Length: 510
Image 1 (cartoon, one colour):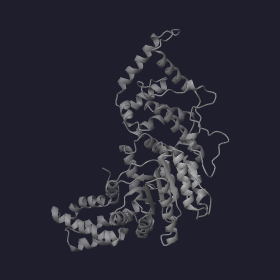
Image 2 (tube, one colour):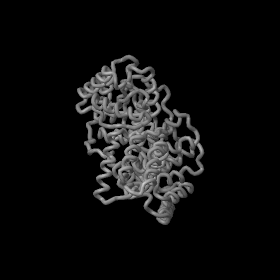
Image 3 (cartoon, one colour):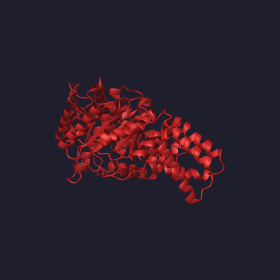
Image 4 (cartoon, helix red, strand yellow):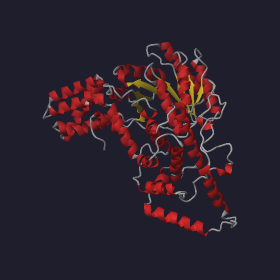
């Protein structure tokens, strides 16, 4: 939605300012005659006020229209369903007026006045605002939708975008059969962070770092704790120290070559900067680990639709990763199409279609045994004609030893490029962190065969082999853009080199 500036604007004032605003509004209403006819200049404001009053009484509904179908070839998105508040018995004039271009929204009840004051006085963080509006809410009932609608109005969210957000979330709760707040509260905060462009806000970064530390616990037990023991066991940076450090890095699945290179760079920096003790080496190590993940900037602009080709071997979590990426795009207001070009694995098409329905994305497939290149070609045509923002193309979980499947992947690339010059714009390799050193061979083969330019590392939570991230980034100079830290939609997060380095080394958040 992009309302962060509006967020800061609305919540920059104090409680006293709100009280003045409310009192001024009440005084103005008392001065108006109940039978007076508004002038032409006053009519728009009066009409908007009536519309807002009516909207607060209007029922909120997010049910999908009866009889709607999601065909295998083309599934309608949740955005095509009726928006919350679009009750067929309610006239259009009774819908909530957009807050854009108007002054601060006025509280219409004692409860909303209290909420407005509490929100202004709260720390300007999404979690703090949610704690206020969700106080007393236990389940997905009318109170929940009323409070969320108020929060979005308070943030001056355009009416249509607020309705779409509530509609999507209500539909998702119904599809997932979630009723109690404790089941979906973190999901709600994640959606709002994406929709309000607040994912980089400090509170969200704290949540991510906490999850990252938890996910890397086993890796840190092998790497971070071993490093701590190494540092404590030496008083100076001698030959024994450097040899033990090399061994530690190799045991953490960094690989021999990247480990030796990292230790060599640390030796040089320690000598240049006059560092002679292990304690003085730690800041340099953190900087070097972070530097491994830095890659040259690249042009992100594309002629829509953006085409994303997903590759990787069976079992790495590629299908669920596609769903999570598509979900992020949907929450950011993009129109998404998913194409099932994995026509070899049993039930692959059905599995991806289920995910598409859950997240409200469109879907295209031709069934088992179909030509994957033909699926991609038709999906490309649909995406171009349908005005889609993003097209995800799933491919078979090809074993990197089977050259015929790699040839098929090359064919898919050629087909979409012919249909849409410049496509695919991103080729993402999904790697399972638990595979350790096998990830290096997979990366090499896929990079050579399909032009991989981006990596997503899944299953970092619960593995002791998270050091493979360092090996892949160091050896192939490919950016790791996302990491998987769990099964929920919110558990696929943008990769931050600084946070990863600190979590890996057992540091606290900045």
